[in-house]
Image (cartoon, rainbow, N blue to C red):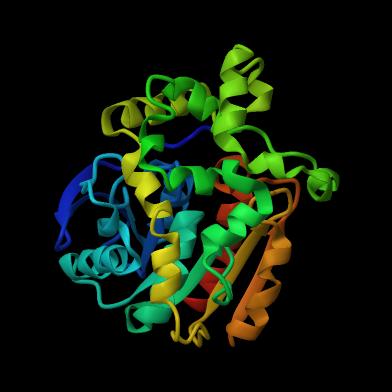
Length: 325
């Protein structure tokens, strides 16, 4: 499938920062807010923006704080859950939207679920793509990640601000590596802990000469080039600062009711080894109005690996629950 062109972006002041925001669809359509993850940008949603807007939905897709053309404060504490959720409510206010359907992938999914718990009055529904809604864990997340894969776990490595420059000057290779094809489903349980050693694996990838075949990557070279150019300009610190707030966000969410009464749609990906479908097993206990679907033979980059399938699932559910016309 050809990657659609993105609608033009405009700068929107949302309070503490100004975000670069792409908008499409009729102004009176049900608003749908799309939140991307790491190391993506709003353009990861290009196919969904086209499909949803053509179906009559008002689609809003920002580069999140710290990413792409949006503002990127330097301080780590500027990327806590309250600051980023403040961006979401500030964006809705700036666009004169009382409530939106919120959709999130990867980090966008984590923040989306936090927002659904903390400011549920701003959302008519929540849709997770790959990233499930989970209960608060018993221990700080970095302790868990370190136990899973040691100090080389990429999230543990990212806690050190020296990792800001890990990928500088290698942006083309970084996105060829990051958007690699997923392992077969049957292999997920056999994957070693070193799969989470992304910086070390990237070093080896570069040393071996980078991408050998386009069959090994799920994002086409012209789109990877746009990512590489954007990150060469912005750097990687903004996105890494989201990871540096994992433990602070865990503290913040203590005592918060994680149960959701709004309609929830969870779309898992069978071959996502970072966010396997089994993690969504918690969701029936947390979501009183839950629909779940799994896309087979797809890994973490669902919007690129199965855009038409994802679009069909989104539109079927949305048109049933929140028809645009």
